[in-house]
Length: 443
Image (cartoon, rainbow, N blue to C red; front, side, top):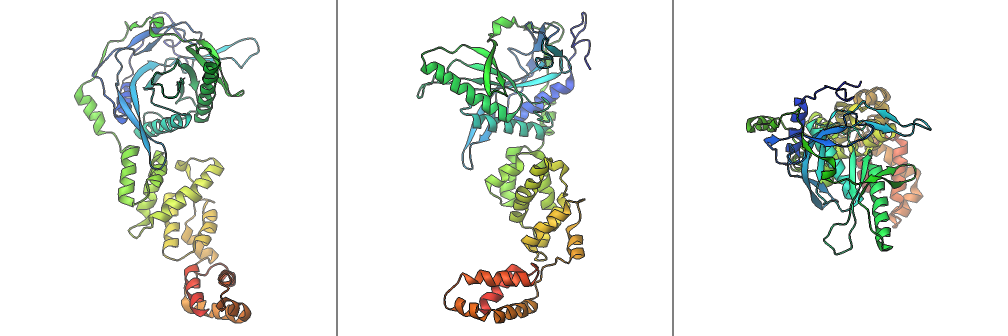
């Protein structure tokens, strides 16, 4: 899978991949950032075994995307804006593997030379939780845009985490340490917490923090020194002689802007306004593009007389639980949006009770079966005929005269007993609302 260019063969010349330029601009637009009409590719020179060329093509002083911002939710009520400093294009390096052999390090060049977007944030993130929210929001935006699948396990989204601490009340940022290539949100949080505590301990012991690059050991849950941190001048940046400066027109940027889909923040606002759901519920539903699509499809299939509360509860409750247990993405849900909408409508119109619906939901998973068919085949239709239920309740009260008298004398807790008996007698099919109404009247 390794090309001659990426293996650093003599005489091989790089070429710009125009799709990558489009993806960078799309991402910049999604980050509310300035798109630069003129940008330059530079060579960043350093020697490392997984960099056969001895340099990396990057962008230094004039990147393709300038300053932008991302808004993250702190909790149900508070949000925070994280400023973006820049987004630049660069080549990915290869990968050194140190755990494959007891005596040798191996070099994997498969991803070497692949175009990479590096998004650099300003130092506005104040905790490991905020860092998690920031990465999740970035991932969500890029998945909506189709510019990154966000799969951290496969390395298509990685984080270099710069951590510094400062004395409470101070405005000066402390010396930072960079933790390279963290490939999961959980590890990122663990690395931040460990590194912040390590720096606090050093300061409190009167020692200084060295600016350096560190690695996070996921087995020992600690960061360790990798190399002293280089500054920009150490890399001897200069314009890449093989790639011309990149010029993009306003017309081209406007064309890409016109193709940008509805992004998470806009979708969240629309869900709140149009579907009258809470900001918290909307945040959950828009956080992933496939969840938002599924929800909108359920709503569309429910028709005009729809129950939004039921739809939200069934998706974020029952469906999410099944997907988590089976480790399935919602895009591959065992129950289609169409059939979940039918199930919700059956509850809404009183054909089945919420309790029976849970039984039907279990059965639906075995091949995405239409809930209406299950109701008819299994005889699970809710009993909602008042006359039939009155006869059933009369019999229960007659069979339990003493308890009925106790209830009338003020022992109100016995009402639950009568409800239970009625549900039992109906095989769980009686309409609970009707049972409650008739029982109250009869008792």
